[in-house]
Length: 353
Ligand SMILES: Cc1cc2nc3c(=O)[nH]c(=O)nc-3n(C[C@H](O)[C@H](O)[C@H](O)COP(=O)(O)OP(=O)(O)OC[C@H]3O[C@@H](n4cnc5c(N)ncnc54)[C@H](O)[C@@H]3O)c2cc1C
Image 1 (cartoon, rainbow, N blue to C red):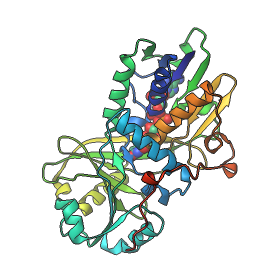
Image 2 (tube, rainbow, N blue to C red; image 1 turned 180 degrees about the vertical axis):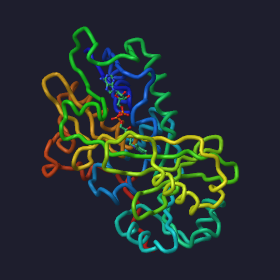
Image 3 (cartoon, rainbow, N blue to C red; image 1 turned 60 degrees about the vertical axis):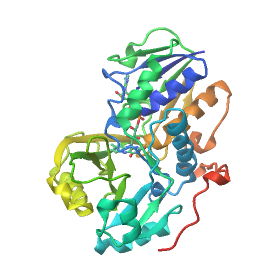
């Protein structure tokens, strides 16, 4: 079977690899000169199915999220398994308690436990939540690994610098993974602006992402290689692609400084802006029309959900399977795969603060 995948963001790359692994001839078309040049390249790389339920309790995030963490561990092994720590400024302690009420799978930590997990945070916070089963990855490493894997498969052709409208030749199926550009065919899609900064300092070491509860944006710091830290992300209902605003930069940098004052001396080595493709319910969809499938709406969860979604796209075509939880157009009719977690993957019992 011949498959054309349009867009080499995280949705397109994972989908192309799944089809190639199933033995299909795959043509991957990307309009930029390299993969991941859209929204995917500025992502934080958090794989946080428990923390994300605070914003959206739909079981899809956890079920598909856990499956994707397995993918980033076994199939494309780029995930780091060190969990996530959630903290708040002393005045925002009620926010931390509220977060605890709306999540599960965490250990409530006192200051001694925080110091044990993250020695550089010693004495900085009295309480924290530790989600040991969460993971993270470096998006650009994940993208490069997927692209290299695809380049090594003889029945995959990757075409960069090429707009999909120029694609010639018939294929059996087209998979549209154009992110926000796919809106010409998906009018419900909107862009949600996310801004980030990357800091560099040798004065702090963190082993795992730190989420800092903030009244306006869920801000986090993700440790990267070579003393770098991605600080993200704003979430603003606008489709402006202008550079990061002063206000957002101040908020992100203030949060980093509140986590550790040594971030005040860090170098700002990068700033970035991306438009997250989102449906009204902020959950992804696999929509089918004739011989085209549109995989879109990954919102804040591209890396968290793309592998599980890509697998389902392949099953829809090769096995004629259906997945109502992501194929129903009306969110109100969504039926989640609520009970397919096996015991080993079930969240830990909720601890009390
Ligand atoms: C600041 C920020 C932080 C984030 N952090 C996280 C996180 O921690 N964890 C997480 O899971 N998610 C995160 N996300 C969300 C994640 O980045 C997105 O969900 C994901 O990147 C969407 O992927 P996509 O492949 O659908 O779209 P995109 O990455 O935008 O890819 C679409 C691709 O299609 C190409 N394209 C468009 N039109 C055409 C055409 N006509 N022809 C050929 N190619 C075309 C584009 O060039 C692009 O490469 C974050 C997002 C932002 C902005």
